[in-house]
Amino acid sequence: MAQRLILTADDNMQIRMLVKAALRSLGHDLIEAVDGEQALEMAIEHRPDLVLLDVTMPKLDGWEVLHFMRQRPETAEVPVMMLTTAAQGSDLAHAAALGCNGYLTKPFTPTDLRQRVEQLLSG
Image 1 (cartoon, rainbow, N blue to C red):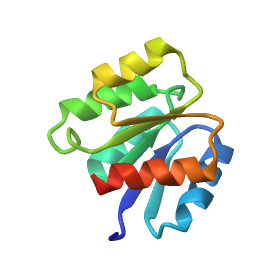
Image 2: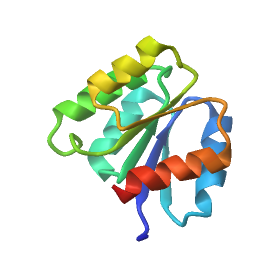
Image 3: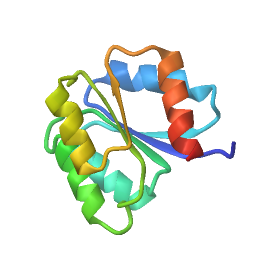
Image 4: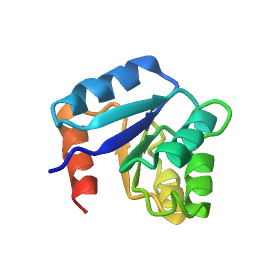
């Protein structure tokens, strides 16, 4: 698979480091955002091949970021996977209604993350 650009948006530095360590072996480029506002700006500017979004972040939460991404032509089709502790049925339904492409709850294993990322990047 060709090298892709993945944006990870999470206010927790340890989660961002875990994601980076888990995905480094796949050979993709990773960029990081520390809050929802930065995530949206980076998604618009860089047009990543995949966005991994936490739900609970400062400035804009993951739901708002996903909503705004789906409204903009340059990010409307970018695959988004929620990577979060929000795991109730209502959270999954809300994600689907907003056009989320995948959902992985924390804690997750590096293997699960790699498998989900590869599935979303392959189409």
